[in-house]
Length: 262
Ligand code: NAD
Image (cartoon, rainbow, N blue to C red; front, side):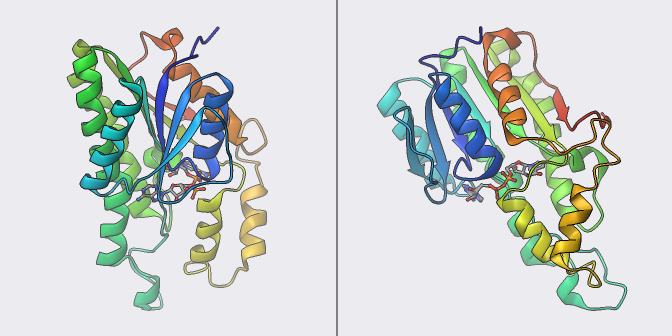
């Protein structure tokens, strides 16, 4: 039904978590997948290649995109999935600057989550525009719409990504390229969530990692009453990438178990 066999996709950050679930699903659907990550993941498949890539570095991104075009001669889809989260408060009530957002954290978050999306989209977008076809899928977050206590910088980068999705869909639409976003809510645990637990101790000093983990699993505020499976995001990626979504562009879809805010 989705008819993705033979399509070429780059998935950034495909070695872990949501990205790995996307890589697996696209490989199963017969897509030739390029995992562009800092290091290789554990999943191996005949449809998958790994190209070491730092999305925040223009030269690295150029190398990867050039290699993909050299190998496959075309690019159908870019999934801008790579992302980091370094939780930090704007100000700590006890005045401890170790728990506060600083220039280093701010710059790193912007570099990966925002500049990385820009660089990948520019280099892949040029290819897609010259082909007159292509899809860019931006991995956002529910926090990009809602804001998030202790994660303001992360949430701001995701809000920026939502804005990129809207603007680039307007710029590229007439040239045959769709740009869409996905905003996952509370998901099964990933590498990113583990880092969140560890660093979130900064602003909930009275809690242990185990207590934080239990907090996440209290899913009472989620209408569907559970956290999301990673494959439930991958399914949406496959749909968005397919021609079944040929009139869908410029939107960011919440995949958040019924929590809605747009
Ligand atoms: P993860 O930490 O498990 O995986 C992220 C991957 O990105 C890693 O493999 C990492 O090596 C890679 N990466 C990091 N910096 C990179 C760089 N500079 N260049 C290339 N690759 C880089 O994280 P995840 O939870 O699977 O998150 C994936 C995406 O989904 C992120 O954009 C995240 O913001 C978003 N998201 C996750 C959740 C969640 O609950 N896990 C919720 C909402 C949104």
